[in-house]
Length: 191
Image (cartoon, rainbow, N blue to C red; front, top):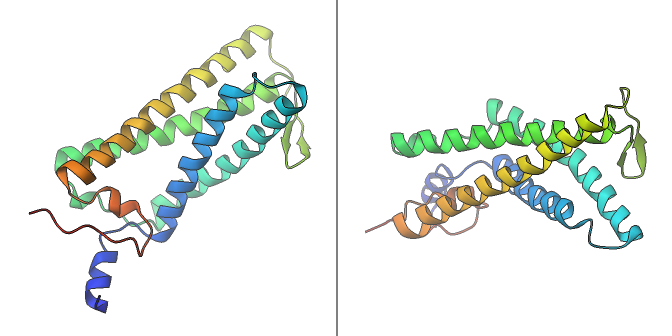
């Protein structure tokens, strides 16, 4: 491939930082959801390890999401102009909704743990609650919202992935390929 073709192809992809942050977020969301849904299944030692892993991954996800939003605002490549107006609206609406839901999920997770008067464990370091414990009723509402919001995130993310696959393999407009790492071959343009 000539350098000019390589440069033109790279302009059709998101930048490396955006791609890395996107797939890291996706992986962490899947891990968080799986841990949260399955940690009641095993016995005490494994259950505790799953909870601690969920807490640690939640703190990593917090940093990733905040960094990702900053990256998106300041340095990330924007390719929405390559979409039709309707597709652009849908893509930006989905992206914004997922960012808001992820931030809400993170806030609910901290409120649930700290509101219950428990420290958050991050790689063995305990971060104590910065406020007094909430009532049991408030904790129940926070836990319920955290759970429902997690399902909503996974549902919307699944729809997001299905739309990307539809665009890639049915419409063949290379939407999915734009979020793949550089060096991944783009399929030929549609006939």
